[in-house]
Length: 184
Image 1 (tube, rainbow, N blue to C red):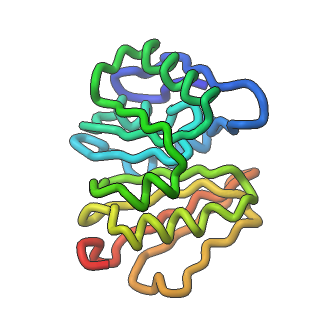
Image 2 (cartoon, rainbow, N blue to C red):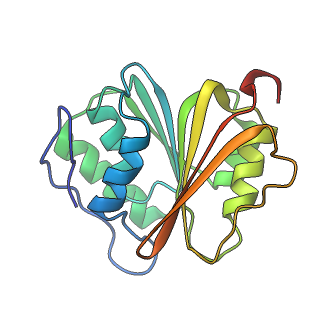
């Protein structure tokens, strides 16, 4: 696993061994980052952060700040190892919390929110609903979800949003944007 582009391009990142994390493959990461190409000045949230690779990639491409939310102690250890590898300073904040607890109490708005929960645990729709209900998207913000192809995004009540899904080998990438995010 590596940083694909930007100021940290080519830096190798580590991830926790075992079944607690599932690193995003480079070609999936490239697909995700082709959706929002310019991260300059963006506020980014990486939920179920694992190794922190998506947040680190966003920072490498110019994000002004990144919050990583992860609960696994093993994964948090790898995040700090990766942050030490890239020497990113204070632009990335690590939050050791359960995602739903973080989302319910968060008062910050984000331009880009990544969510890559464990597959087939019924977390993808719950996470998306919490993001939207708690109005965590900045105006013109976007949620980028990585999920198992068998997990379908529940669109009822989301008619004012633009929802686009694409299938890649063993996962789907779904984006949710629009909806006049300031007045959800």
